[in-house]
Length: 281
Image 1 (cartoon, one colour):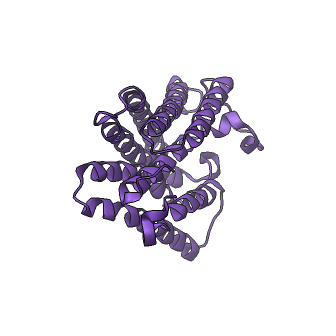
Image 2 (tube, rainbow, N blue to C red; image 1 turned 90 degrees about the vertical axis):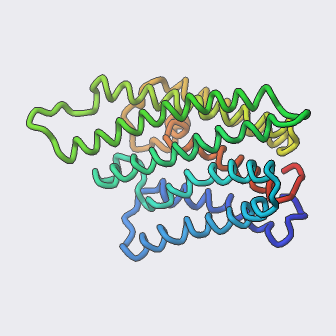
Image 3 (cartoon, rainbow, N blue to C red; image 1 turned 180 degrees about the vertical axis):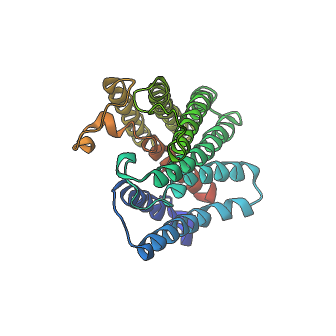
């Protein structure tokens, strides 16, 4: 990261490491003891929050509206994964209880709103000024809008499903295999695809503005393209998960929170830029 961040240079590496920790702690099913679960639930968001604020506060205190806008967008992109750290050991839905899944989909709904705010607000600082990017940034904003709206509907359907499961009416039609379940799979497919597309557009925009190295941006675009191909290869419907589901790329890239990984990375880059580094990452 930029060397002139001085004593604040620890924030970006910590944020990137904590992303990997969050993926492992949230994604791997485990029934932690109450003490360990409470500790993980407290420590992870505190560490992420402290690292993010170490980059956000200098930009905010500068009084520069451009730096403030970039910093706010970056912080908003960090929040979705910070919220997911509140679910240590939950793993995939089939490995969790109904109560855990209800909490999961509520948090996913809230996280999606923060993701939308972050991706939407990125466009203005990228497009502003004579050197502003008025091609890739608007495309990133537009695709983000569709992706977030679609995922909010998907999450609302799943929250409703957990509520119905908890209080079944006398005449109840199971969710799996119903038109509503199939429709939710389609919504999740397009939400993921459009989130990857939005990330690719923003990575290109970051490179055009000099916020991100061209090689790094190329790698992010390539990852997004591979993820989109994986989704298309898998198909619109999320099939029944086999025991070795984690070895199937098309399944992994379709997990609701996985498309949020690269926006998180872009959020870190935006925070570094806003904190005063002023150099390519």
